[in-house]
Length: 208
Image 1 (spheres, rainbow, N blue to C red):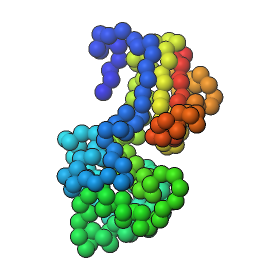
Image 2: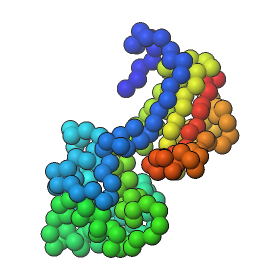
Image 3: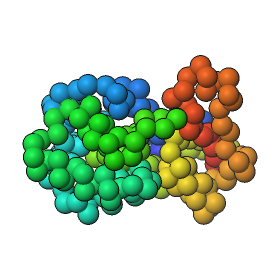
Image 4: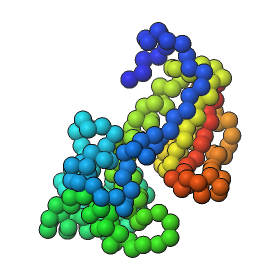
């Protein structure tokens, strides 16, 4: 937990950039990848020492709990149907790989243009297992202790939930304000070069 400048005896930061999905490239398997049951336990976690894994969620949580996670953290509109399918399937045999889970979700949603149908569910599991929103709120609540007046704090988010948290914080905080009212988004050229950034939003907050 951050204790502020005096506690650590370090100078205030002038600028900082926080990528909410810093682990995106390294931690989150794409829905098309194969992974073992051990990887399913770890690949959606930021650390192997976390007490909870995605494997635990899909095998031991109730249908309503899984549905709530998929809807709340992934904004998955078919969360209830997917949760029911997961519970039915695990009753027959364990869901051992990322591909097994992705295929199960795809069987409920079907395929369409754009991202893989399991993307939102994988995202929800990752956010929940890593307690990402809790850590984001914790960082925001203590950011005024480490940034000096006039410092820029830039947030790159890849999900609307995270972006709303940052936006609400900037509106309500007595210590920061948004440099621009609207977030910066990638150009079509950048998206064509790197499709992973298609949902990215950049908000720059200024320490008042």
